[in-house]
Image (tube, rainbow, N blue to C red):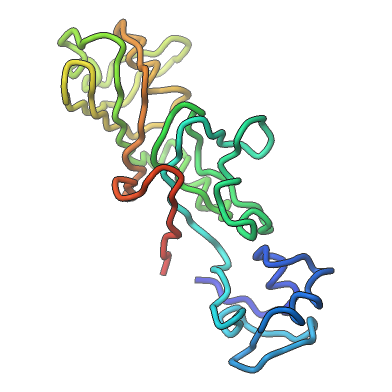
Length: 229
C-alpha cells in the first residue's frame, strides 16, 4: 500500500475530494486533520496515512473496485449513453489519474468488472499472458446440439478472422439453453463468437467472476472496494 508524503492539497485533489484551487475552502468546511490535529493551511505536508477527513481515513491512493455491471451501461469514458463511472461516488470520478475499467463488457453484458486507477495492474490483468480465469453464464437462442462441450475444450476452435485457435474452455450445462463457461482469454466478443461458431446465438450474457472476484453477492450496480493490503 502506498503512503506518499506531499502537500495536503495535493493529496485531496489527486483523490478527488476537491481541486487544488478548492482546497483552502475544503479545509475550512471540513475537518481535515494530520495525526488528529486539524489543519487549515493547504501547504502543510503529511503522509497519506496520517490524514483524515471528518474523522475518516483518506481513500486509498490506488483503488481496485469490483462492480456488478448492469445491462445498458457502457464501459467507456467517452461514448454516449450511461457510463459505468457514473455509478461511482463523485470523488472517485474526480480522481487523478482516472479510474478505468480493466477490460470491457458490452453494454448488454452484465456482471463482474474490475475498475482501477492503477495502470500497471490494468495492463497485467488484461495481458493475454496472464490468462485470468473468467466465468460466464450464457443464455442461448437455440438448444445445445450436444457437441459444444467437446469443441470448446479441444483447444482447436478457430474464430472467424483469427489466425490462432482458442485455448481450451470448460463448459457446464445448466439446461438446454443455459450454460456456464470458463475461459482464460479475453478476445473481442469471445463468448458470443464461440457460440456463433457452433451455429448458435447468445441472447443474454452475465460474467459471474473475474479471477478471484465474484459478484454473486452484489446486486446490479453495486460495487465494493477491494482491500489490497
